Image (tube, rainbow, N blue to C red; front, top):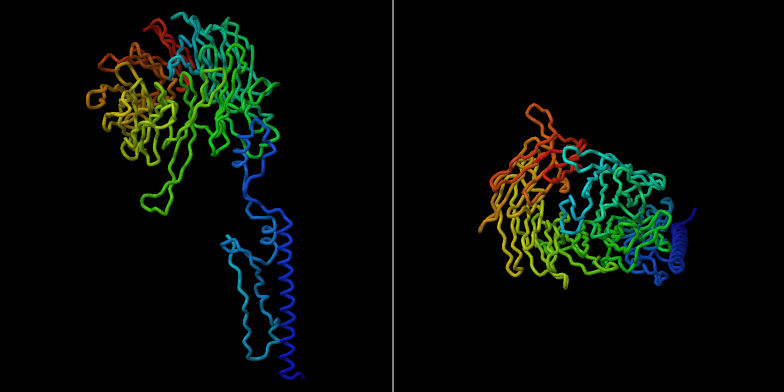
Length: 617
């Protein structure tokens, strides 16, 4: 039997051996860490190097897109991932790695070897846890023709109905459908599912109709904008003459003379980008067999991309559909406004600002950046960009007038602001900020020379009310404005209507159509009269309204449910007689209210929906 001293020496010998073994293991692990740390390439948090593309005309795009396209790894390097997954180590909140043997820190091993009454202490430290000229559309800018679901020549009206373009003769009560063009699928691209966004343009000589729409290829799972040129010189026998494509989905288009500006939205996805192949990240235009990437010099992009969506612009010859020039706004994918010479595109982003209640806390402010391309020359020319606070409602929120871009936004704190921007230096030269009651948002905007009209509204499920504002912008150093005060409902469209202002929108609730006439006095904007229809459904699509400023007439379609629950589908033409809005025509017309159109020619009104109606005024 061993003596106490012999047993003690034996225990100490085992403890020393155990400590040596674990020290050796620890040293080996540390050695492995050093070797692997030196030999393996770390997971860098910077994007891959793209200098090999420096000779590419798209290099500046590649550099910016590379940053947004890059996803940083979860771990700092591959060794860290291995260690945290398979070895007994832990990572603290500072990112420091340490060994963690757990209960194996008991140097004495099995308790049977410890002398009775001896206190065994573990001094190792545990790691922490890891963590057109006679155009029928009310265009925003005179001479800049917008696409629509119908267009007219001197003898015919062309209207889109159920995947067909139908030609109607202009003959008063004797008018009728005389020809129809059925849009066919080509190269697997079908327009059928996007019939709701078809728009057409008619050439100045009335011989060529151009259809623009989004098309989908179900086999390739690909979406493109398609332009189809149709010979309508004989409306009874319309034939297709050309077809071209543009990347993306159809956004909008304008016709100026014999040129067509086509705009689309095109989103790039991370899993499709290959910088060796520009077609994977640069938009294209052309025929199905000959697509070409757009010009690099005409791609406008902010310093830091917030998304990889393009607003593409293509200038097209109406007679041939050949591209005269191409351009794009990268990371600009919100609203687009087109003036007589320039195209404006916008993007929204958040910027951090200090919290006024807590300086140590950051909050975000919603901003809109606006950029522009000039299209008046042979090629697109980038002009500049500017940021303003808030969000833009639609194209009518922007307007260019005598070298000044005017913009109205809904601000971050649910209010409204107006900004005037000089196109000489792209600086805000005048503004009226937060002019609306707190909690209201911009619902409609209209400009008329040096005047701006804005409707803001507070809208809840049970309550709709607003003021309408008139701004005098004739002197930017002294902008003045007046308003109606709080009135019932709000206008989703404001229309300059001669000496008065026309508002189209909602009354006391979301089911009431309210059409209102406003006039400016020395001190306020006052309501002169209104026309209301309760239990009503109507369109907010501005192009669905007939606007006759000369005779102060407004037409639109709506569905009315009477007190017994019966529906009445009709089209109404109203005329302002200086005192009231009077019904001139009320005709039975059915169809989607967004698609119904009407035009007045020689005191006949031609109404197009699911049925065709002609009435003499």
